[in-house]
Length: 203
Image (cartoon, rainbow, N blue to C red; front, side):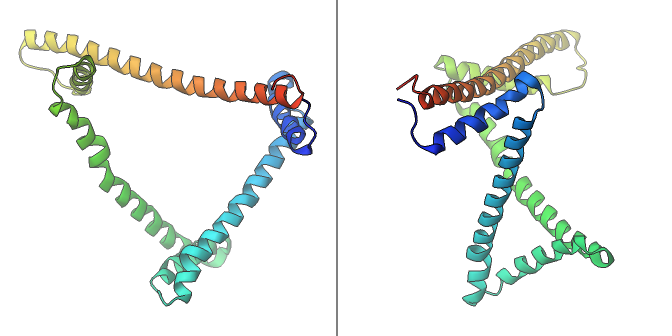
């Protein structure tokens, strides 16, 4: 059944206005859809930012939690970047923001990048999955350990291990790329099905 409300038709127009870039490069329909999307996204983000500011900063300050005023002041100082005589002050807030973010990120790295991979040490090699995981961990780890070994036979054996590690890396990256590509195809298929539903060609 053909769509009888305006919403699906608007969605259909913007969908194929964006896809028109593939057919005729940059055109007026593509530009209109692109600028509309950016404008709507900017408006939504601004409203969400104001709601976050009100709920996470202004409301606690009004309730007597003055510690939140520090974040508000640092945020205001960042905006001084647009006032040339005192724009240098924005560097203080930016340095605080970058330093805090970097510290929090580094503090979480040992858990996500070291401890989690090290769990493969404790897996019993009683299933194919565990054997592949353990082999992949050690061979990839060996691949990224540089330097020559004094024993030629050991060095030759490590070359074979490094080749296996490189193979594991190639398979992993290929699988990641394939999964990403399938995700894009899924979005295109969904848009085609949406078009057919809007035109009444599918249920």
